[in-house]
Image (cartoon, rainbow, N blue to C red):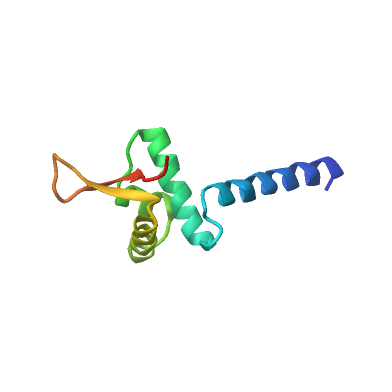
Length: 97
């Protein structure tokens, strides 16, 4: 590997660590971080995100995703919003400003 490639990779990892600190994600494991980033990405790309989207995109089990979302909700990182059209569907929204 070239020195430039290693420097770029190190820079990206530093940025990711800063993001984790800024969002207060430092205490979360890598699975939980991936689930959170999946939520953010779905909201950004699709303007909405439901739990099924997170399960499908992240590749984690339903129970793993639910557990992480519950923790995010308890910490105020996400909020759950029940759909007006289908009461069985729940959307996720970011609880951070």
